[in-house]
Image (cartoon, rainbow, N blue to C red; front, side, top):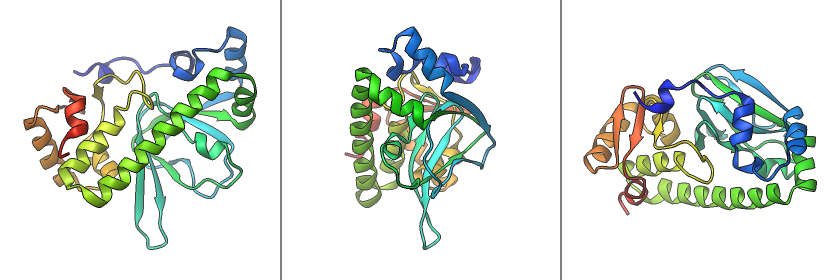
Length: 232
């Protein structure tokens, strides 16, 4: 059984202390940050945050899996990204005063950390390390969305699935995830915008190429570089 399927989910305090953006904080600063964060459990199919609401929190996935998407006027849904455990999102929205531009939906029951806006702003005002983290995070997110645009317009389905999976193992956005992820084919289909049946075919192609293996309840990555380059 994959490691991240068997081990006990981390506590909020453990997630914070293991996060890349806390590494430069003193114990006193970290204690102040912890006081400005709370946790919610979001049921599968429910919203962690919603499009159009005021942006009052920066969000992190403690456990579970979240789909970030936007519903269009045509009735279609555009999936922007998936966020696995250890990932934080919404920093761009926190730097503005506009209403939120997307929904974040739990694909399974998920534990979500919410950092209050005043705590986020305090970190910007007091921590050079946190500002450096934000620059790297925003730059990586920009590259991710440019890749998504290329994937949607230019690539075949097998390659789109490969790029979607590779994005979930981004070491900058989601450090500490390792090479195994608890994800079902249906959940991957929601993220890639592809039917479960077509996901199954794509995973077989990627497995035959030596990129990954499909296990009960999850996927193990064997060659992340090959997965990123697949079809290129």
